[in-house]
Amino acid sequence: MTTGDTVTVGVEEEFHLAEPAERAQAPATERVLGIAAEQGGELAAELQRSQVETATPVCRTLDELAAQLADRRRGLLAAADRAGVGVVTAGTLPGAVAGGQSPYPRQRYEWLVAEYADVARKQLVCALVRRGTATDRQRAVYARRERLADVVDALVAETRAGL
Image (cartoon, rainbow, N blue to C red; front, side):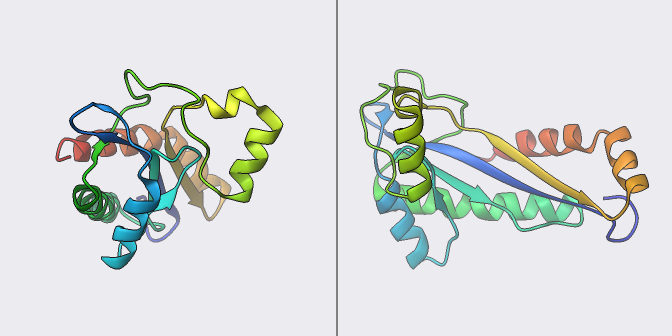
């Protein structure tokens, strides 16, 4: 992103799964994850059973990041299509009913629900997470000054146009 291998970036994206006919949340995470695994894809579960996550590896260039984002999204779309559900790229799913499903069975999510009760059960938002590293303070300042986070956000938005 700058010179050499001094600044890297990776992106995690969360997506809603929806029933196409009803346009409602689809608790199909396990089905989609299973299909993706059969196809060699890499997806992860999220807190709600109607959400999945993709994650790129650490990338050293924006071109590499764009290719990784597109590859993971294609895998998600193929798995969701085979599962009979749609993929929604929005912060929240319009019309979603909070608390209508149990969390994905993972110790971390079970703890969240036990600790935060209704707040966790009603959490129906998806996020985009950017992770970056720099080998030294000067490179970190450069990355911040050049607003690489904004560049990555624009890249993510641009590549979402293909969904």
